[in-house]
Length: 409
Ligand code: CS2
Ligand code: MG
Image (cartoon, rainbow, N blue to C red; front, side):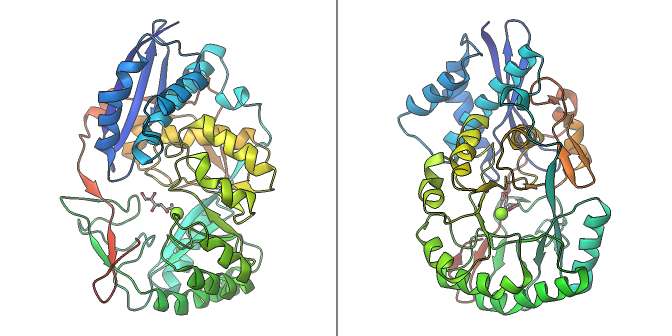
């Protein structure tokens, strides 16, 4: 069997997506997600100019060999563009292998280790009443774990608050990346955030009780000692995790955070290779691996890092916002179903337009996800629907502090 076509498909139903479709000489197709929010065309170009020509006439069965070939022959390794490109190829080859075997990918990864994948949803509000309404909305939708993000008094726009407007006037619901020629500038004040957040979790616990698993995303904005302080201040509220408490480049930072708090830590959505987690896992500095199939090189390395993490009782908490396409999302559900050390899966539902382009088999019932049992990854691409949504440039926002300094968004 040989790969005879490799197509890079770009569409923009509600947001931009880049998808790789490989087809074999037997007419079997495989899909892979290569979406990198705000830099989509860079990956599409890397694939079109440098990768797809290398895939033609290759044996689609040789997934590991193809992965190593694309990673090592590039000489310039790692990084978000390279690894999103390799991820798309890896996913597409697993999709083809599943279709050839007539099995869903999780069966090829060792079979199911559970009946479903506990998910968490994004609740947010500009004030307590709207936050409580958003939490109730997610509980009514079946979620049994809730991520809490709120507006901060004195700050105009904050990550993760769905109801606030983008520069386009569109609500955040589906996407933080605003369509347009320039990134939206937002403001930030960590001291205001540190004063406000414990009050929010105190109110949420009073309203919803001690059991409900609550998560929060610090979104890379604190210094190590600020993160330590917040982790400690939130201990009475028994968070499931505090995510991305400091910028991910400085991994040493987590040693200081660990010294001061037992609030569980999750990190890794911006990581691209297993090497990014090595020290964090070996030194037990995190409790959850936040990698995503699309940005981490695909299904193969995601399975490998979870097998390594298992030795340290560290669990999965795969990244699952809407800028991971339904293909990338389904791919990591297969990994999540097969591994032993599963923790939780982020789940931001996609728009109707996106679900028309990407025909899916996954299900979400009573708070649990399942990839379905269709052969392969379980997602098909509707070309006609995709053609109706041409690419539109979009940028993630950026932050400036009160004195004008650029800060982590
Ligand atoms: C966030 C993401 O869901 C999360 O945990 O960190 O929504 C992140 O902001 C986007 O993926 C950026 O594209
Ligand atoms: Mg995050």
